[in-house]
Image (tube, rainbow, N blue to C red):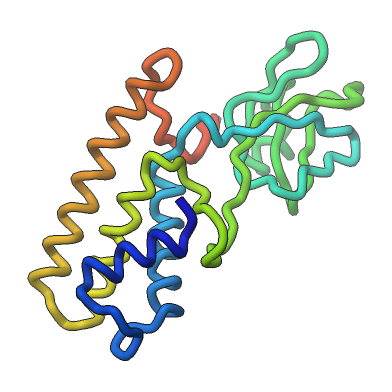
Length: 196
């Protein structure tokens, strides 16, 4: 579903045919806020990308957002992401870190490394589809309505739609989680980092 359709459905539930009270631009801003929330809360495996990063330059893909899991070299050796401080202290022989948008690896002999990553999400416009899985697009309608009724100073309806939004996100996350491979929950946005 594209954003204009989501906004059209939200406007129907607002019972407002015109843009006199809440403009299309404001509704689009609300959709962007909901999209950011959903991208961070509902991390589904279908969004994970793969890339080979050439070392030692370590230039990441242009759409790189966050690392997902461990990196792997051509021999199958795993490299976990650690903090920049731990990387500088050389506490782990098989580690990677990202500093100033560059991937660094503790193994100086590597020429490339394979990574999995979650791409950064884009700002929504009316003609595009949101970054989140289509299964969660209906949730966006309720997130937009929560913010719109708050704008209209109808606290009761705002709370009602917030409750519907939270409930639907939780239910669909659970169903999506069971649907994905290995029955693993896919709503984890940040990867584990060993701090010691």
